[in-house]
Length: 88
Image (cartoon, rainbow, N blue to C red):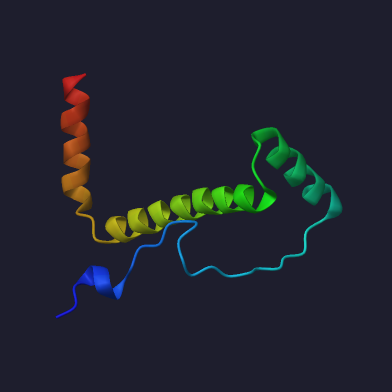
């Protein structure tokens, strides 16, 4: 029987399963990306990958937070905050 890990493999940047993505951006933004990549001594592709991972990590955290908040016991959470405030 396949486990969850088999159904939803986690791939890190650079793993097999690459795609090519063509985007249109303003010339000045492209120039700034090239300069930033050069300053970091990485390729523009690597820089875009790093920026994408950061953006998706933030998005995933926000999505998880909203899902947890939707199921939250608000009175219990407020009580916990009051108890924390009493400690300080």
